[in-house]
Image (tube, rainbow, N blue to C red; front, top):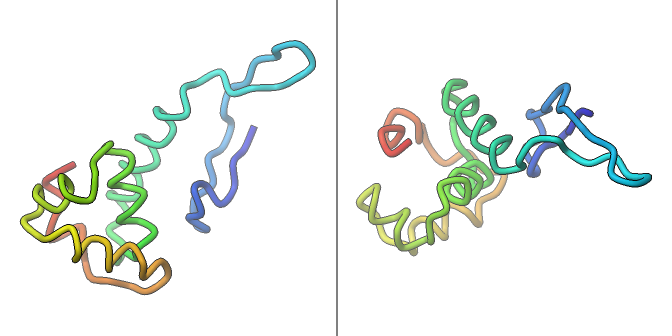
Length: 102
């Protein structure tokens, strides 16, 4: 199974995901959270300029609230919320600044 446009990130396609049959349905044979973590690591390796989509995706993969995520990178939750609202707007080079939290 392939997942295109994974989590709304148009450049992410997850290939060859193992599936299993349950009744008449094909379901993932791997935990969705494991897929998200693997995608997050690959996004960080790309070194792209982040948009709000990437910030929100990485925050959620880490399982952090706006407040906890903001505290980790020494910003306010309001700043993070503003970034996340700018879904398709390039924010800045997040990787160079804050990749240490991953």
